[in-house]
Every structure is written in structure tokens, then in C-alpha cells.
Length: 82
Image (cartoon, rainbow, N blue to C red; front, top):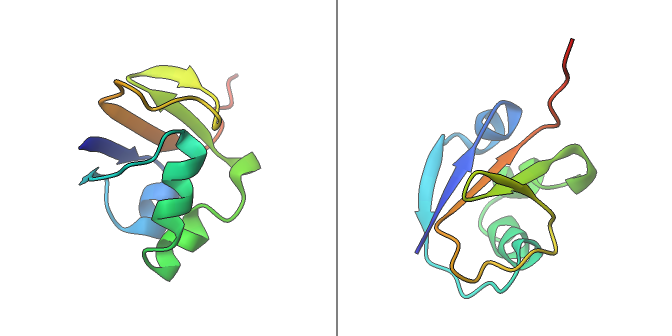
């Protein structure tokens, strides 16, 4: 079981701030593929991965990263600073 967190417009499109997901996904890309098949709102949220960032256990990561031992996955848009 993995905690999946959604931030900003990702949360708005999916309609949830977080959920627990039972998955056999090996990588973040695999998890995204599973989530996209759930409902159209997930498909919309993950339609353009170049517009998303991912953190595994609060460390910025890549979509090809392994989920082995990961407890939390967070999806969010790129952060802009000023």
C-alpha cells in the first residue's frame, strides 16, 4: 500500500488530496499507467507528464524511479520561484 498525494491542479482534477493505493507497480511510470486507467479524471490529471513532478518519500525523483520500499508518492506541478 502506497500513500499517493496530489497537489495544486493535480488535486483539483482528481478531486482528492491523497489516497492509499494498492499497487504492484515497479516504477512511478507503472503507477501512473495504473492510475490513468481508473477514471477520466485520472487520465486528465496525468495526460502530460512533462507538466508534472514527482517526489518519493519527500525526495524529488524521476518517473522511471523504482517504487521498491517507497511509502509515499507525491505528484505536483513544477514549482516556480521568485
